[in-house]
Structure formats: C-alpha cells, structure tokens
Amino acid sequence: MTTTSLFVAAGAVVAMSTSISGQTLRFPPPSATPFLETIHEASSRLKLLDLAAAPHAGREIRLWDGFGLGGVRLLILRETGSSWRALSAYPVDRASSVPVAQLPDTSDWACRWRAAVDEGLLQLPPYPRRDSTTILVNDGYGAVIEWFDGTRYGISGAGNPGTYGSPDDRQFLRVVDAVLDQVRTPRCSKRK
Image (cartoon, rainbow, N blue to C red; front, side, top):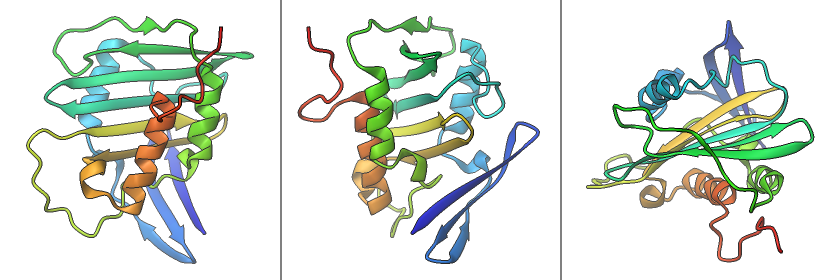
C-alpha cells in the first residue's frame, strides 16, 4: 500500500513523504516540483489564490498542462456549493495576462473530479519514480496537478510522462486524461 503525506505549515508545503509497504521515501521540497516557478508566476498574473493556503468552500483541481513549445494551458474544476464549474486560460506562461474564462456547462464537471479520484488523483506521488532520467526530448509535454479535496491539498508534476512511461507516469497520465476527459469514449459529456 502506498500513502502520500503532505505537510503544510503557514500556508506553505514544508515536506512530503510517501510510505511504500512501510518504507518511507522523502521527496525534495516543492521548489523541485517540475514547472513550479512558471505556475507561481502565472498564478500571480491571473490573480489566483494559492490553492494550498486559500480558504475553501469546496473541492478543486487545477491542471496546468503543456510546458512545451505550444505553451501552458490551465484548467480549473471548482466545486461551489452544490454545483461545479470549470474555468480555463491559455496561454498562461507568456508575459502578458490572459483572461480566465468560464467554460460552458457541456460536461459533468463533478464526473471529471470523480473520474480523476478513481484513477488515483489523491494517491499520486509528488514526482514520478523513474528508472532513468536521461532521455532527451526536443519538444516535450509536462503537467502539474494541484488538488484540494475539502480538507487536504496535494500537488503532483511530471515532465514528459509519456516518454518515460514508468508506472507512476502512466498513473499520472490516466489522471490527466480523466480531468481532460480525453479517453476514447468521453465519460463525462452531458447528453442533450
């Protein structure tokens, strides 16, 4: 059994650890999370509250994906009261600010939360465990997922998870696909 612990003090993540069958592995501080500087800069430009420190009324996922030549897209799934809404902004990694737009209600956003949780969102390690880190990629893909489940905050990031393909990378991509609903048969589209 794998469990991941995230320790937050004064609104900042101070340590993370994962216990695998009784063996505890410590991860570097969040400053080593892939793409964290880009996320902080974009959050500031977009005037987003720090998800780890903000008071919350409900659950939320922030998926930052891209990080290649095409730029970074932000998708936010946010529970507000008894309903969910989705917001998006692109490209968020450029010097200018872009608007955060509410997405039309064409998908069951709560279904995407449940699908991500079912795929292992709350158990993702902060960084994928990999056998090798020496693969050269010219224009890669990366993503960072931040989540708040009503009581706990978590963050997980991976650069080029499809290229490395470790078990953690594959789980990370399944969670990303659940949030984006990019499986062969969309699970969360609303039928008219």
